[in-house]
Length: 297
Image (cartoon, rainbow, N blue to C red):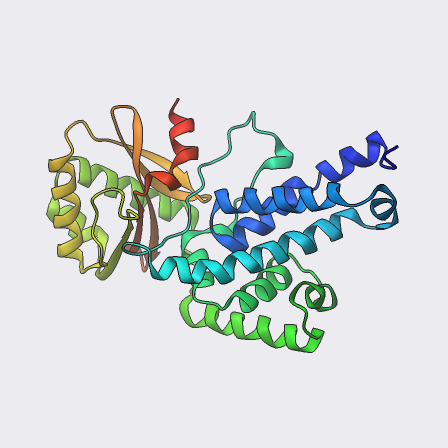
């Protein structure tokens, strides 16, 4: 007979939200994060009942296994992304509906912003695991060492290296109200095809990066400069009759979702510098927009 009681089983299942939060930050993909968490649970329930009963902290065990699965995925992902058509961007998260199961929600904070996740992509897999587990989730290096198979001192150095990478590229985030106002103005200017207004809202050195995954038409290289981006945005609107723009949260921050025929085709996240948009991340790969399509239904 299974040694795990109903109460214990509910306790283990209650770890799912925390595991998803860890896995999404490690992988930048909700789909891959869900797969990693499912694999961790499969390994848990694959243990003999006596072995499960001997685990004093199932949550810690599941976190360790999830992180190890993510480490393996990150290693293989590098090779896959080298073959990716265009630029690979993290999978955008919509705001969770109020009715969503709290235990299965991704906590939306600065550590899931598109800017933060893009910087994480520049880290090595080991740096990313050490940095995320320690700096974001406050796991001690002794536990991280068990995940990475390295000493606690080596894990401390990996986290410090990841921190330096973040520090080189990060800056204090703009206040939420300022972000929301600028994105609203971008929406209005885009809808009215007002190129001068768009140029005024963009930093002169702004960069727009798009991810279509080779599945839909999009710019394969970053579009640079306010005028170039504004012209590109208007050209997109002209080629997509019936395009509907909606203000929304993208990974917890103000963004835009563009729908056509009631289906979300594009999600855009924005980063500000001195009151102007200086980075735009555009996700058009339909495989990354599943949660957004369901949101529209």
